[in-house]
Amino acid sequence: MKVTDVKVIPVSVPSETTYETSLSLATAGEQTYDHVIVQVETDAGVTGLGEVAPLSSWPHGLSQGAICVLIEDTLAPLVEGRRLNHIPRIVEDCRQVLSGEPFPLCGIDMALWDALGKARGLPVYDLLGGPTRSDPTIDLHYSIGIKSPDEVRADATRAAEQGFLAFKIKVGNPDFEAERDAIMAITDAVPDARIRIDANQGWSVPEALRKIPILDDAASGLVLVEQPIDYDDIAGLIRVRDAVAPPILADEACFAPRDVAALAQADACDIVNIKLAKTGGLNRAREVATVASAHGMPCFMGSMLELGVGAAANAHFAAACPTVAYPTGILNVHAKDSLIKEREQWTPSGATFTLPDDPGFGVTIDTDAIAKYRVE
Image 1 (tube, rainbow, N blue to C red):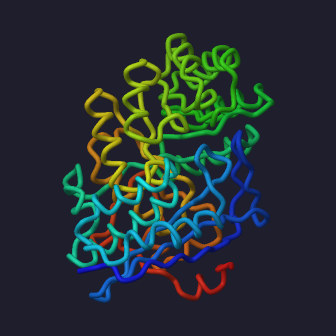
Image 2: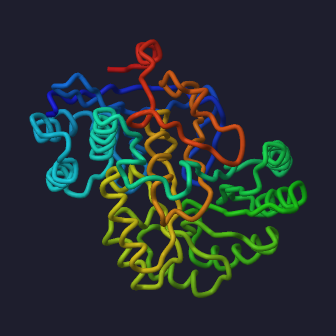
């Protein structure tokens, strides 16, 4: 079976919920998620789906337009005519011409895996070696953006009623007192809460050294601290890790297998965050996980706030990756539409989620939604 065509569909979907981090603010009804849906068609009539969440504010991030151009002009000619079961070689050939830009590669990689799963009648997690548990169930955390303490308390209370005990809360708010109070609000509302914080590079080294112990105390022991300082300040990250009690999770500092090796050899972090968009898809994510495992380092599975296709791809990888050791928020969709017909099926109702066993990623495009949100 060969690839016959590669197509890109740029979409712009309004945000449904407000989500603030130290890097960005998506206000409900105002900002949009400007993503790219990728379709890989084959000579057997199978179509694979992928998604790119560009996030141009990130290291290696690109605009939506740049993603489309790179896929159409650079990657598509390398993919069309290739055998579908040669995914690792196709992905490596594409990676070689991108000069370290993983985002467009991710969309191609996802679509190839989805097509292969559909062609073989298998869910992608089975193509990746099978679920790490007896069934394809993943643990979920409840994610909270930067909000007031009262809003955080209300969110935590609602989450606990759904069975959530693991919480991820964004930090980096200029009002540090409110930030501390927000974390205390979670522990007050949910005494058994397991709290991790994500600064998204929002602190300097001195700020991290001062603030992390205070927030650790407020949480009665943080599970981990994610990317507290600038992604390229490895020396600073070492200082922070050596000085604070909670484990340090590297996110923006870790894209490729070599990044994991460098961080591990420098003793700069305890955990690495795998995101398919950062690695360039599932194939390279497996390599990142392998290097992490070789260094005895567990992984966290993150997302770039993908819509339905990308969220499903993330979930398949998380279900099959033995080094993913923490609850994840990869199924959180903050946009008004996920662009898939199976949105209800892929909406979790509690702290665990069991993936369907449909072939590929188990999602199909909602053509009406695509027509509504497609942009040129």
